Length: 291
View 1 (cartoon, rainbow, N blue to C red):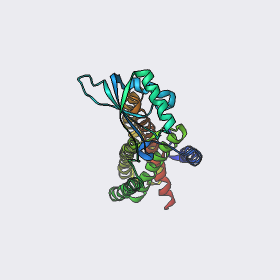
View 2: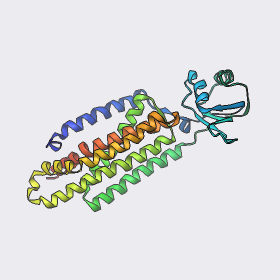
View 3: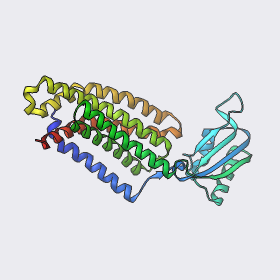
């Protein structure tokens, strides 16, 4: 049996390096916030002939605006194309807006502007604060539940694994400069739910093995290893099933779902890693520290 518990320092070091590089990227590169956070421009256009989202996105690509939110008004039975197109993108200076509209006209034909306006951020500072508070409150409730169901050391290890997963996803988005918008918040909440579920399964098995092998309580690393490997098949099947979906969404879905699928992919991989290599060994570390 591969010894996971006694190699805790190695797993912690791998995570620490990635998170440290992520923190350096946070400080130097920051994040690529979308218009949900920064505000932007809305163009409501009516073309002389129906156009498709892919064609509009191709016309915007030379301006690095192909990640804009594009909506079609389904004004006839063919919902894949429409004369009426709504483009929501970053704040466009006047000269860039005129260039974009000229490119759309050259690529897709003549159109009329129904609406042009600058919009503020849909996720304001107050909503961001509320989201963070909700996350902190959820961690506190997780600690309370796991402490009641198991013990405080399990609770703190589980929340530390969740924070680990969120930092890994944030690091990936900072490294890649992928767009962070409201769907990213939804992805984080999904990742938290997935990760805590996987961790609880392993912790439950550790608790059961502690009862069964209570005479060997002095050899806790063996119990942690036994518990991890007893649930390993379940953990791998679960993450592979999730990854099949997120990878299909990333590679076969539309442009607007790629960043969401990327966040889920990184989060599910990190969640599986933290459940197997971080949560159990971290509980063991806390247990040894309390002796």
